[in-house]
Length: 286
Image (tube, rainbow, N blue to C red; front, side, top):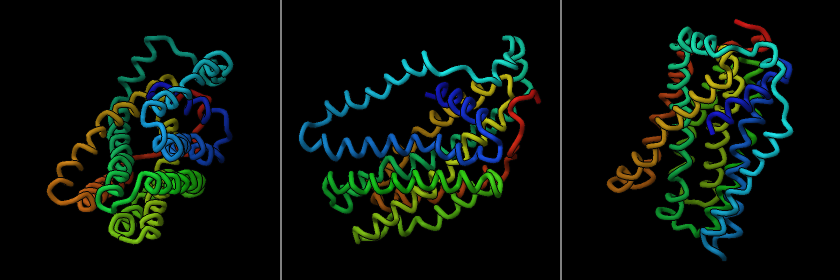
């Protein structure tokens, strides 16, 4: 997945004018939210009647799109102009290794805010709020609409105020929303809180494709961003395993609030301490 993400982000960012790069970044990133939304809709429609096995096969259908991408999508013009040799690739990685490490840390924190606010949330709704599977799926659909809109809004804002400012603003707003997201008993307020939380979390994600492509050296743009993204996913994969034992002792609401608050604060610090190259030319060497 990381490789496809890196290549796809590079091609898309290179094809759009710099002034619209953030908006397209939000569109590209929120393919994740659309996929989550479709999965929630599939759960709503399929699971109550047929169980998990049809869902498993249904989830494999989008992978067939790779056949179309492989045969129909052309190579990036920027890559054609600056196609590097193997030696240049490794030299570029060594020369930019500190930036690579920073991006890995950034992607770890970004994935932690995503997993920390999503993975255990449906379980919380079922166990602590006593909601049935269809109600949980409906809330998931609604908060993924919020995620989609957040990515577009903050992706657009990142073109105007900068990548880091837009991302930090979204993350800090998410921190303020934690009480509304987790503590209400009312179904309406729970839904509002879930919508707002994912609007902010995926709002922060909206600028990421453009941000990573701009930070990556042109010779290794796909490898650099894709590998850093995937390492971040790997390092953040334990979010649910951290939340689960806390939930056993303190309850799901406390576990989710504690983990979400911690990773949102940490992510704001990591973003603020970084750098950015908003609007940089992607068609020329460094």
